[in-house]
Amino acid sequence: MKNKKICILVILVLTMTLFSGCSNGIENKSEQNGPMEDENLAIISAEELSNTYTTRFSDVNQITAPTFTFSYPDGWSIESETVDPTSEEVILSNPSGVTITYWNFGGMRDLTGPTREINEVTVEQVADASFIPGTIQATDYSDLGRFMVAKIEIIGQYDTYSGGDYTPVENGSVRYALLPKDQAGETQECIIPLLPTFSFWYGGHISMIANSPSGEFTEQDEKEIVAILSSFRDNSVSSEPTDIPSTPMNTNTIATIDELWKLLAGEWSCTEYQYLGKIYDGYNHIMELQYTDGQPCMIRKSENGEYAAAVFKGFDVDNDTHYKAYTYRKGIDDPSDGNWGDEAEAAWYTFDVSELADNKLTVYYYIQLGDFLDNHKFEYARN
Image (tube, rainbow, N blue to C red; front, top):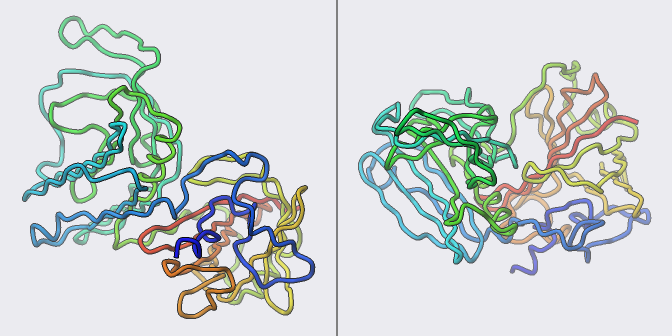
């Protein structure tokens, strides 16, 4: 079964065949399994996140509360689970002692207590996160905005036992956390015993924090942590981005994929490619929306050649600026067209045309694999 899923679970879309069905001399590169220019670049794929954990606070306490899931690769294991009437704590660990702790505490709105240590820290986004806040018990938390995986590094400490003097710290310890994007920047961290810092209120305090015994992480640890934190989501909320920039064209008349193709006619140059919020160089290409054998297709060309086209088989309008074109839907489309495995529910591109007036286009690519949503982001400029 895993062999069947290889094609859909490779992360860097432009370097391999995710789809089939378009002809006209398009080269089949399905044997490729990595970046165009750096074959040794390791990125955690959806297939490697082969284990999924579902939180149990709601079930154990028999109450209405959000249920969260997160996925993790082999080699990580659930070290402990604690659920009581006011909180839930789950510790995930790997063989080197790195831990990721999920914590949900609803006992009080403001976390207070004696502060024994104050750190100056930087909070830096290293990746986008799939988590999208929704509504809990009639309270809308969408104002939390988009989420990120953040790198938190101590850059200084305050002496709270004497005069409060500040001492800079070089090469301070590092943690990673799931946080709203607006928390990025430099801030003070007040340490309260037995309570986590860098949580967010979502019907309760929620935190998802990675720690290392040494305060340092290997490159592989970092990649796995980013993938795990990025996979965190509320099961009741869609994981598709809903950002709508402020300068949309009037696209109210777009009701079919043919109308969208007409609107986006011509060549588009890729200006940026992101996976898990990280930007990767070397993926410059030209994208054009065409028809092959009467079917709408996405054609991409780079200096390394032409890559297998995406063939679209379904179309939905999300809103006035976001249009969804499917390449696969389980139970509807032939899975053999893309060697889709049993866990693949759907694959689609979302075209965000909100900046079309500025000749800019954002394209998201998604594969829904059970509880995990694999996603990529492409920025384009019209030629």
